[in-house]
Length: 220
Image (cartoon, rainbow, N blue to C red):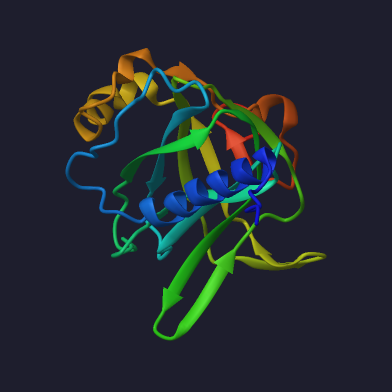
């Protein structure tokens, strides 16, 4: 009897699905202490995505930026959990993350911010659909930028449900955060990272709720 094996495409999809599971579980790790992630420069089929999510005065406990790999339509997220949201002062905390992703073309298609108060949960999300592309280059460290979540309590009703004036300000903080990233990822040559910040300037729209610093900053 011959044993049936999955096709190469199915195998690749399963591999990517496993990586996405790693994303979803790995991004909730503590922000403190060094990350042991390493770069395999001989593996051109995958690269490392480095990014940060910043949180200011807010009761938000989870920031999640939804991504999808175009070829296999496999979905995942760049996210952090803030165990103790800081709603009392204006301090900004930055959480650094590095994840291994298959090389290829991606897009950001959504995001959520989640606030948990007692037994109730409130989710904030974009006002409409959008698609913002970026690339992960194999055998490379790919810097995707810093994502600062901004929110308030002014809720509105929209065609897509309940939304708010929440949004992300995306910035290139590579040089500013370089020393912190070197400390966080001691096994990576962060100085060699490629700038692969998603193309917000070209593909952004008024519904995305994601704004490249200096471009289309919302005024409320």
